[in-house]
View (cartoon, one colour):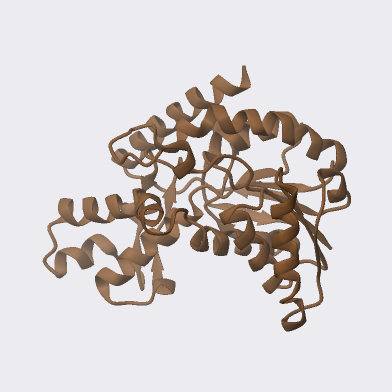
Length: 311
């Protein structure tokens, strides 16, 4: 099986390494506007090939993606380079949309030309409107973005630390935009079937302060990471690896990825079944009135953003 990674910057390189280490493909093709960077990354990773499953990892062009089952797109300007690290800016990652949409308008038609049957995963920020644009340019529905998968993982991690439990035993979701309007579903968050709100009250937390603290930590985790190492790469790389595995092995696992929703009129994150052909179906989770209102506001913001690049 062939997998393509388009964009071999901080995130793309980690994605390629995770894909190789998980044994998800017999052939991995790295594509980047900087051909020397793609070649160097392929060479470096190739030297680790004897330690894991057999894989041919090489640099190439979009044309070399022909026959790939999955194409993962990380190409574009990142948050640090794009100057989107102001915690007070309500637009957040959406500031990158115009510049990265220009990249996608050149790139995605080439992917459609050379890999018409592939499933396409969008990782580039802002992933929701870019996935909506990619859907339009590809002319098919086998496209989704990483959405709020990383946000949900961060949410679960912070809740786990707060209550001293393993993150795997925390069930909590983030839906909507991967960005400033994302919606934390506190009403359905549980640990061992026990509502998180009940546990917080039992342990004497002020509900508003407890929620606000965790939401702020999750919402701006990317900026904290950028301030430390220049780019968020390892967490999202692991998340992309899990999604790639669900696609390449047709596992039909459920993740809060972002795909086009007719109900909300745009591409946004909902719990979705991810298989070989991308998102097979999405679920509408229960929300209280506050959460549903926040979801509606976020959907409006995403529709407005997407309209600027689809026109």
